[in-house]
Image 1: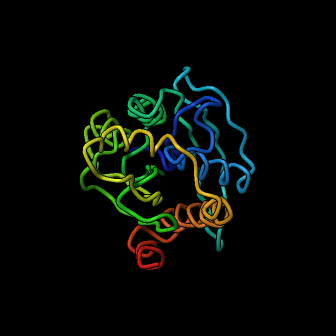
Image 2: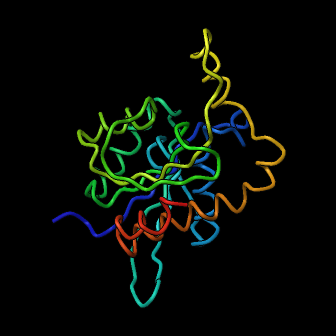
Length: 199
């Protein structure tokens, strides 16, 4: 019997250089949850910052781990699979928060399974867990201009910062992302999708 813990993972790249970039949306939502849930994070095998706690919502108490991989985006899977294996957490109880270029800034979609959509962090997790049957909270960041230098544009885009207008809306957007995570945990994926995916 696997443990009853949930594992919530925000994706990003560690280090000052990457703070506030589009690719670090997962880290930013995790920071909101960390504050909201009053969790402190410590080291897990040098692979991730990890904290644990429990929260009560509507008379229901859930236990969770909250993680920020330290492995850089493209190797996120080694952190996620290490934590999941160590604490015996089923993929159905894993929620990964990440940036998504297929969604406009401000849009959020909750989903489970499906393709990695060109996201190297998700591809790494799929491979390390050996399944894509975990939940994802996709935080829209819009996409770079297409064209002859599309790959280079994409890298510069995800590692770039937000526009002035987006920065004004960012706190609310991150809070919405945190709400989606809680909705998936407490109400289930389809209820969370119904509530947030159409926005």
